[in-house]
Amino acid sequence: MTKLQKIVLFSLLLLVALLVYAEATKKQPISWYPSYSRVDKIPFGTYVLHDLLRDKLDETFIEQNRPPFEVLEDTTLTGTYFFVNNWLSIDRTEMDRLLAWAEKGNTIFLSANSFNARLLDTLSLEMGTAYRLNNLTTEPVLELANENLKAEQPYHISRDLTIRHFTDLDTLSQTVLGVVDTYADSLFLADPKPNFIKAPFGDGLIYLHAQPEIFTNYFLLENDNSRYTEGVLAYINTAAPFYWDNHYKSGKPIQTNPLHILLNNRYLRWAYYFMLIGAVLFVLFEGKRKQRVVPVVTLPANKTFEYTRTIAGMYWDQKDYKAIADKQIILFMEYIRTRLRLPTETINNRFIKSVAARSGNTEEDTKALFTFMEQIQNSEKITPEILSKLNSKITTYKNKTDGKS
Image (tube, rainbow, N blue to C red; front, side, top):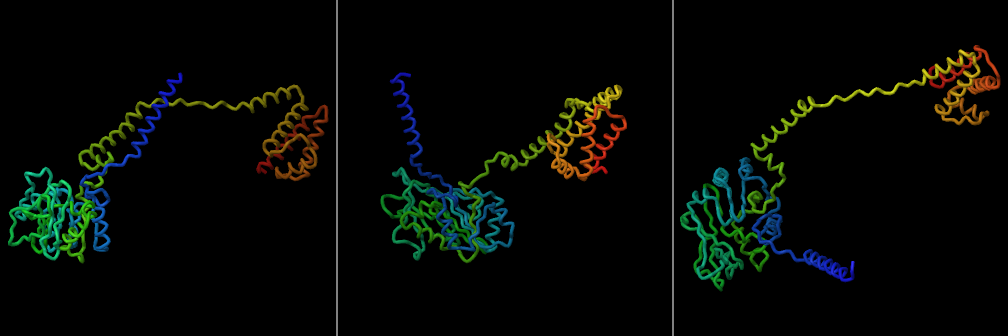
């Protein structure tokens, strides 16, 4: 590699390293996703509101992660059910259960840009969108109707948002609690429109707020906007249980495990079960039928006894009883080395005591056996009777060692 090539290569590596460092240290862009989740600290999360309400309400603050339809199966529940999200897609059946719960004397508080059609029809409400033809953006200007809660000047959300409001209110029964207008260079509501109302329903109440951004981290942490949110929530009875909904949230954590999604659908779940059953049946029947026969391997036979008997027979036929006795003594010494774990190079009193101790025989019997074997080894010839006596002594000695006598 030439010097020029090395310089070019080093320059490229340095450039790549700088790009990686710049990317790793780059400030993450702010996420403006409208999650409304209690765990999100992004601008449109509800971490701050959730934390404040939990501390203020303490034991009366109850989180609900299940759908309201399941929660309200418990007919003993009373209090306020609080919903906040950019849109609330509560189906007709669930909404009927919520309305029946409110009719019994409970409170439902819903804040969203759009509401369930069933709810609006029940309350005889319609919704519209506020905008200014000469403005490219629509920034909300908010104000509460109650003089005791109204601030010196309206609250301004300095961000382009959808501004929703209610129309065709029944002013005889429904109360306007807050209004909204589009920002036009000054904090003044030229054409205020109701965006926060209270509607009695049976023995209970329903509160609707059409600007859910007032409950987000972004709004609460800017200037003194928290006073507006506090004024909105002032209508809630804090002594009664307060149920915070975690189910209807755009930023709600969802289970993305493929198996969870599969088992969550009844038809896919049963298809999955049938597939597993089919696989088990295939293994039990098809797999067994095609399994190859495992050949039986015969272990090699131990021919040591036959070999020993053949060799002994040869010596016996030749009447060489001395050779047979020597072989027996050699095998007995091997027995001592392997069975009693003792070296047999030196035979003395210490060796005799060790053999006696490990074999369970007496020192006298052990010494007598080794003396008898030494006499045989020193003899040139022996008789069959001496050979038989040697075999008997060795067998008796080994049986006592092995616990057979």
